[in-house]
Image (cartoon, rainbow, N blue to C red):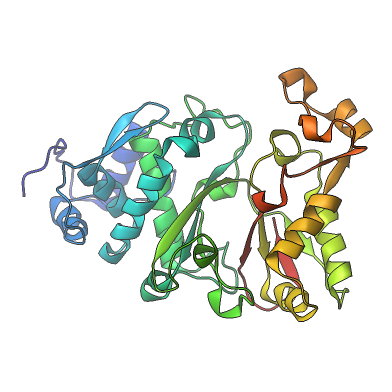
Length: 329
């Protein structure tokens, strides 16, 4: 196969290859798999698209993301070929203008693209949705998310301290990929809620901070759990308190089961969070970001407390994780 990318000859040593790639600034700091022609061809075999098909310019440097360039980063991340269609779909979503990848790549805020898989593909390739879903131990979660990060670095040009200006960063900037725990979701999964068929495989991309734990081992009924959720989410330091974004509430299966048992729907949870996850106006004005141009929406101009979300339907709710009374946002 003929490649458009430049071919480089190096010593046949994993150490030498990794040292050289690291010196070029092409890694995330961890060892990579050398992207040999043979390995890249195996990845490309899992798509019908031409290697030179352009997915689009990737900010902030606006390098052109071709299928071939993406495959190279997929090899480097340690992915198996079966993951490639998911990664292509995720990159296409990231490059949608409404996603604002430029802002996510270049901000001082410690956000990173989170991938949420739904439908049959998640189980087919083994993406973890249960115990430790946001953590280590599962090759698909780790390497799919890492492939996205390497592409953002090597194609998008988001080099830390250069175009990636994140003040402190966060661990999920290495990899951020999960599946929803559909089997233990009492209301139905995210992709169905958003209009896809249950047997359709989807990937949802979100700009997100690292998970903020919501620990409630005491409450045995919905009111207590909802109170814990709302008070945890209404934090002054969260961008959602100022920018009115689309927060994610990732319910653990035990919390979800209690809420559903007590008759609550997702919309009921959203309505509660809208009404109770609020920052008092005096705190918002004293410690907020009014000087940076963020002001409460006119709809809340007479409110004593400013809601975390503009409207209840702006809250994304998923179910993820294993046993234990923890959720996160």
